[in-house]
Image (cartoon, helix red, strand yellow):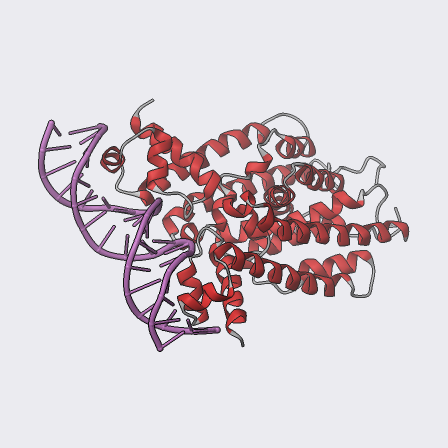
Length: 189
Length: 189
DNA sequence: GTCTATATAGGGATAGAC
DNA sequence: GTCTATCCCTATATAGAC
C-alpha cells in the first residue's frame, strides 16, 4: 500500500478509536510506519488528513449499509437486516462517534461528511418505510422520516449503551426492542 | 461558591463540551477562576477532579430523570414525559458523551458512574414498562428490558443525529417515531 | 489555601538536507 | 519523497514561598 494510503488508514483507525482531539500526528505516523516529513509532504496537516480519512470512512459505511438496504424482502426484513448486521459494537460507529468531538463539530468542513452520511442513512430508511407503508406492511400511521430517525438513533444509542456497560448485550437489547415495536401485525388488524 | 465547587463545576462543563481528552487542567482553572496551585491543593490531578465531576453530573441526571419517572399517569405518559422533557439537545448528554472518550472507557473508575447511570435509567424504564404491561396498557408481547434499552438508545442516538445535522429537529423526529411505535392501541386490539 | 517558578513530555508544524 | 533538526506552544504536573 502507498504511503498516503497507509496514513489515511491509520488516521481512520485512530479517529475511530480516539476521536479527532485524541489523535496526534505523531501517533498517526507511528501507526502508518511513516515519518514526519512524509506525512507533511502528502498532507497539509492534521485537518487535511482527517478530512480525507473521514470521507473514506463515510464512503465505506454507505457501501456496508447499502448492502442491507438493497437486499430483497419486505421493509421490515430490510430494516432488520440493517439492524442485525454484524458490527464491532464495542468500538462504536466510526462516523457517529465524531459528532461527540468538539473540533469536528466546530468545523463545517469536518462535520459535512458526517452530516451527509447520517442524512443518507435516514433518507434510505425513510424510503424503505414509505414503500412498506404503501404495500400495507405496517400498522397505519407511521411517518417515514420519524421512523427512520428512530432506527438510526437506536443504532447510534445502542453503541452508547454497549460502551457504557462494556458489553454488546445492551446494543442487542435495544435492537430487539425496536424490532418488536416495528414488527408487522400478524393478527390482521 | 467555594473554590473546590467552582473547580468541579468548571470540570463538569468542560467534560460535557469537550470530553476528558479534550479538557486540560489549565482550561479548568481558567473557567473556575482558580490558580494552578489551588487546583492541585484540592485535587490530586485531572483524573481525581474528573471523577468527582462525573459523579456529580451523574447524580444530577438521576434527579432530573427521576422527576419524569416518578410523575403520575400511565406507563406511556411517564415515558413520554421522560422523552419530551426539555433538553439542551445540541450539547448532547453529559453522561452518554463520555462513552465516546477513550480515556474514560479505559478507566474502570471513570467509566463506573457512567455505567451505573445508564443502568439506572434502563432499570427505571424497564420497571415502568413492566407496570404498564401488567395493567394491560400495551400491546401484548413487550420485553421490558428490551424496550427500556430502546428508549434510552433512542435518546442517546437522538443526540448524535442532532449534532450531526446541527439541528435539534432530528432528535425530535427520533422521539416522535419512538412514541408512535410505543403508543397504546386505542382500537381495542 | 493560593501563588509563582520550574520541569518533562508531547502537540503540531516548518526548514532544509538528502 | 523521506529524513532530521528545530521551533514554539500546551499538557500535566511538582516544589516551595507566602
